[in-house]
Image 1 (tube, rainbow, N blue to C red):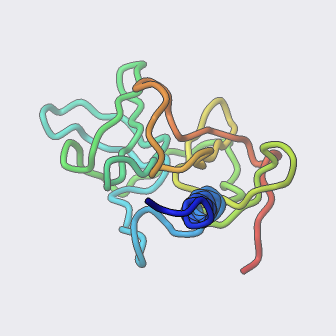
Image 2 (tube, rainbow, N blue to C red):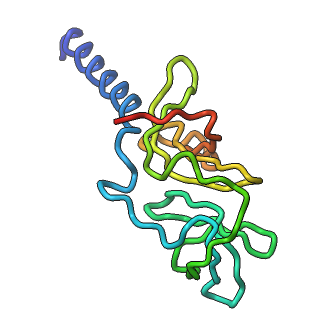
Length: 164
């Protein structure tokens, strides 16, 4: 039979590990040491591989260990991996300014009591505004519901760049 002191030490150690996981998970980029190169630029014209229909890239997000691209096509937004389209190197002229942040940038987000650091994992252009994807909770912890995302999309005013 284990002593209550030994059980308390184990419990305290386990609680410390959970606290460490919750506070440090965001400091490692999800794609590993080197960020995979994008297949196309933002606002670049693309053709769908399965047809001759064209569209343009209005966003990208790291998901399921690959870049998923938001392609505006026929008044809809399709979310596709790079195998399903090919780029043309023609960038759409647009009045949207350049994004304030880049993929992989470390930013501070004010989620509540104290600002937390997160990594930009996606960029999306919506109505002349750039939105940025950051995880708001750990990917290691189980999802509360299957349809609830760990990713939240924020405007640049909600973020502050962290100098490393």
